[in-house]
Amino acid sequence: MSLNWKEIGLVLSELPLEGSTIQNVIQHDFHCISWQLYHPMHGRWTLYTEIGTPNSRLHLLSSDIAATQSMKTAKLQRFIQFTRKNLDGSRITSCSQIPFDRLVLLKLDNHGSLMNLYLRFYSGSQANIIITDEKNCILDLLYRRPSRNEKSGAILVLDPQKKEETKEFAIRNRTEGSFNKQIEAEYGAKSNDESMQSLIARVSQRRDRELKKIETTVRTLSLKVSANAQYELYKQLGDLLSYNKHIITDHSKSVLVDDYLTGQKREIALDAKLNASANIQAYYNKYQRAKGTWQDSENEYKKAIAYLKERQGHYQQILSPCPDSVEMIRRLQGELEELTVDKAIGKSSPGLVFHSGKFTILVGRNAKENDQLLRHWVKSYDFWMHTRDYPGGYVFIKAMKNKSIPLEALLDAANLAVLYSKAKGQPKVDLYYTQVKFLRRAKDGPLGLVLPTQEKNFAVALDDNRIKRLLSEGDEHANE
Image (cartoon, rainbow, N blue to C red; front, side, top):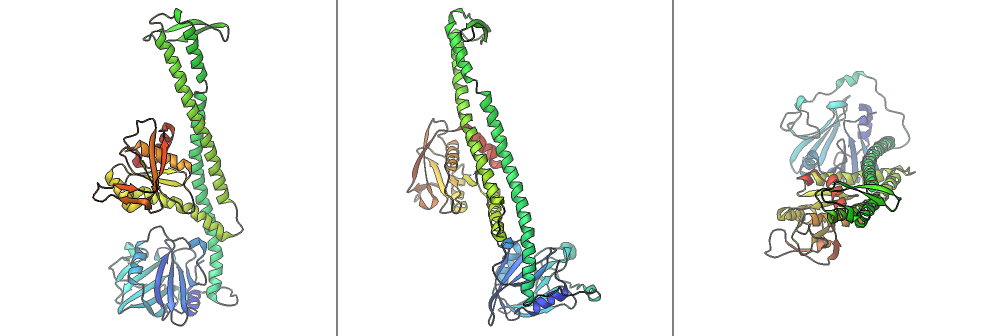
């Protein structure tokens, strides 16, 4: 339940707003903003505001903000960009509340530039934070409401909700001490519980999607293993044809032979276009292909099973109950943060985007994309990989805090490096990799050319099954 106008007035009476200077503004989500302030007598303090939710409120923040809002938005929103540019350093010259209303007005002076900051703790579409000049011309606002003529450049028309004057409003049952601390404690506990349930639901949805995809891969590989498990049969048929080569006639579509394994007659299909020797060799070739496919499929199947168990264990750990609710929320947020970063990279980065477990792999397909990725999309601790002695695209593995690059991610990146190079037809390809901080641009060299140092060597044979998996799970641009 939102604060009513009497409770807002009580909160304001305890805050040292007048004379405070705005030092920083932090947006935690689309409704919650912290205002970091400094007062000559009270020192540094933080005002927390939540607008447009069932828990709309403001209060002093006595400690670091609760874990539910501790994570800033992935990208600075328009409103926060404006406040940091225009409000930082502003001094609050006065604070007032419109009588019988949930509308708070802070008058600001930013080195002679006068502004009004309106905090409207209304419900529904009327909730807003609005910044105007001294003549109430709107400079910017948290929510743009064109239907109410609340947009940049429009004149703000105040429409206080005076109907509240006729209603009976009471201040909730008081506890001892500061009302601000009481409000912070009440809403903080409630907000933590609501956010935890929401985070658990989001992580569970992500888990279900990921595990379903892995389980589909496991089933596909299992069928592939079963389909090629009888590879020895092709060798047996080749041996039977070889033993009975003398009775095979040209242009025959089949031949009836004595099967020494069963002691019975057996009919073996033939290719009428091939002679006896070619038909025999064809069965041996089928044996070799089926055996290779079975071995590869069996290996990939075992890896997929292991990966499925690893991811199941990972999500079980992430979603397991924790007595410390704040730690639980941070854990869930950390899981979702990685997904957010991946999506942001995938939508706007040049080249191709792939995923190897939790790791993101970026691939440049030409000199321009290599250069753009190197300049704008990778950092010093990310890893760079390239084919040795063959031209090709740069492959980058995005580093993750406190996590080393696993072998599977290296193998995925290596296969992509070979695939997008002139070496993809070679049976085995040498590569090298190093961290981006150990790359040096070649002086007067072609676009994107770098000289690596402290590199490590890596050799790989192109793995068709791995490539198919990466292409099927990768960014939509990978099919271009």
